Length: 378
Image 1 (tube, rainbow, N blue to C red):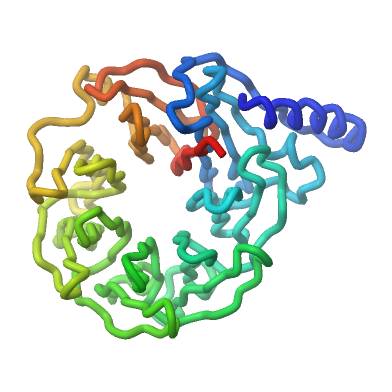
Image 2: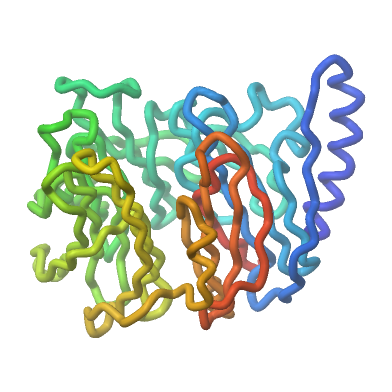
């Protein structure tokens, strides 16, 4: 573990044992895996979602400098946090020396120091989903209502948060059940799903002017949108989950110069990670008609906008992965990390592959490992 984090962890573990004699605290589990060196990054945080209603969201940390994987660090570092991290971790990002973790059902964004994971505070936002950052501000998408399927579910919004004070300073109404966002220039793009209003899904991407913080237009894309990533060429890659019956999942490319959809890929995209000119994509598509899951792994060249041949896992390890649930690529070494949620109620697995797609190691994580944020060297 990074030395600052390690020292704080040791001290707070002793404090926790003194202050919580009647409580049971699960200590962090440290597993040696691989010492890869810094390469501009100290390590990464992995946010485990935890099954909804179980209050088991947890935080792991992989330290590149020691090669240790540290499981379940939050409770020990923050012994006075009520109910630990909370219920359902949905996104994690690092910005301005702080870690921001979206805890969806707990209606908050947890904010920690990036080097120590010590709690700084929280931002209260109902049914919050994803994060984006620009100009000293955090942007948080919100379903703006309870967690339930409802044809009358309210329209969603995006909250603008001052990262210095952690206060919400502006809000803008977008579409129904907004999901992932990306900033391109002075515009914030928001994928709207309408997932609570099934079968009346939303099918738009909202475009927000960051100066006025008003929605300037909606781009019609496809139903039930989810992930939205910006590449280096002014394009957005937006995933559609389809309707799980007859409308198949797909991936759409938006040109932000014209705010028009310019390309469609017939790919199932449960998540994707853009690294350089390559998008690493996995799909876990469920169909109610057949009752089957279809698992796929793909790569896409975002410069040429073409699907590459083959999978980014090249040694057959994908046969061991029961339910892929997260993907990330080291910005420098190009090592590929894939998480496996397995049965959703027991500890998952994190796999590390070298840049050629061959497995290096794997380690046990918390329940439903999902979201990774790399910690840069200060």
